[in-house]
Length: 278
Image 1: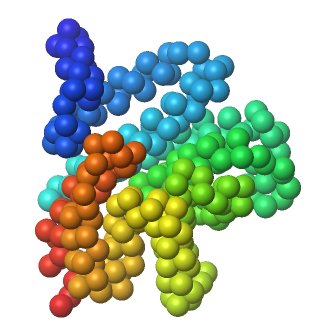
Image 2: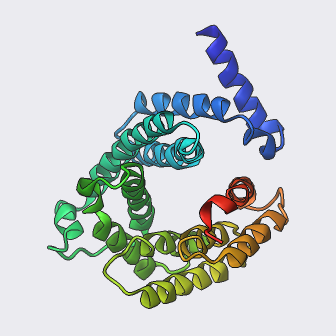
């Protein structure tokens, strides 16, 4: 226990004093940090809205940023271990989802009815943060379920929440919702390929506009969701190389997320021959 606490203390020091690129090479250390933070939050005052939000967000970030990333990279080399990672992520995402639903149910007693399209609610801009992270938790639970139909049925709710966020404030968090809408749109099976691509292009352009082209996320998402899916190898490689060459500014709000995007872009490029038939 003393040794574990020493690792946690060292990680906190690393985060505050060392280049963030170094952190990305220490996934186990980061995992310990997240798990410690989650346990601490779960023991804190859960009547505080800020604490509830922090817990939900931390679980979603841990699920996507660490566990799902590990699972994706293991899938071809250790399928069994990869599935274990997906299952772990799924549990965490479901916990985050339950927290998000509880937060919004406390504010709107018929929120669940709204999610199913059976009620009208008057949301405000203050609700965006909760709708956004709840949508992310739902998306994580769906992705980590590996096609579970009992999770897939929640896809319309994800779109409903994201569209409401855009309606309330289109430029919230520098276009973050538009990036999320890109990923959501690629999961839709109820629209034609042409409409799907037009929609993704629309959200991509909006995400770029509101982030002043400083966020690598939309470029990475487009490469994975469109160019890879439709076997556009050159465009896939061009987008990923663009991400890798993006300048990283230590004073930018996108510093850490762009470093993560660069790291994933390099890995995706190493898998190019596996993804494309020609």
